[in-house]
Amino acid sequence: MEEAPISPALKVAAGLMFLFLLAPLLVVVPISFSGDNFMTFPPSSLSFKWYAAIFSDASMTRAFTMSLLLALVVTAISLVVGLACAYALVRLRPPGADALASLFAAPLLLPAIVLGLAMLLVLAPMGLLGTFQGLVAAHLVITLPYAVRVLSTALSNLPPAVEEAASTLGASPLIVFRRITLPMMRSGLVSASALCFLVSFDEVVLSLFMTGPRLQTLPVAMYNHVDQQADPLAAAISVLLVVMTLVVVVIVDRSIGLTKTFVK
Image (cartoon, rainbow, N blue to C red):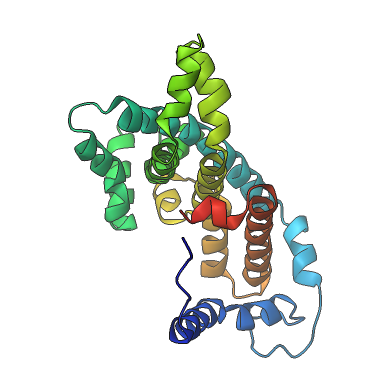
């Protein structure tokens, strides 16, 4: 079946939307190369000193390491838990499966500040504020819905007949899942990993509620830096984060393909 051609009006609208979303880069990128001590646009001189300042700033490097470790841990847990939930919802179909799927997606419907306040009230009595475990628990609340949704979609698109054929040939359920189901879900696993990693790494509102003076993620450290100083350091970090996001997208495109990963 041939795909319907995309109308020129839709292409123009999509192009205008991309320009609108990328327009801030036209200001942020020149400021990141500014030689001035304050944010000014256009910059009076060009320099790489703010990129060098990132690596000489111990607080920023610690915050980056914390964000990277946090995102990796949250992504791993989200994949394990999300895969189990998706398999139960799609293959086992328990009573109220649709209601459970909606419940898993509920955190995405709440404003971030409301969700952050709720996590504060729940985790504070447990003594998890300002701890790595508390950050992991808070970030899982917003990454698990993505993992469950993406993996459920990937699993629902797999023909059950292939798994049933392997079972009739004597394969145990665990072998069927490991050798048949998981390889066929590769695109879903890659897309869920990319989404969970980027969402966790960039999360700032929940992290503001959960972090403390001794534990900060990179977005929180940037927020505090901009609140106290008006130099282009934050712009330089922002450009590096954009580059990191592009690297993740390129890795996904090279390994699976963006069409197979995000378009069904």
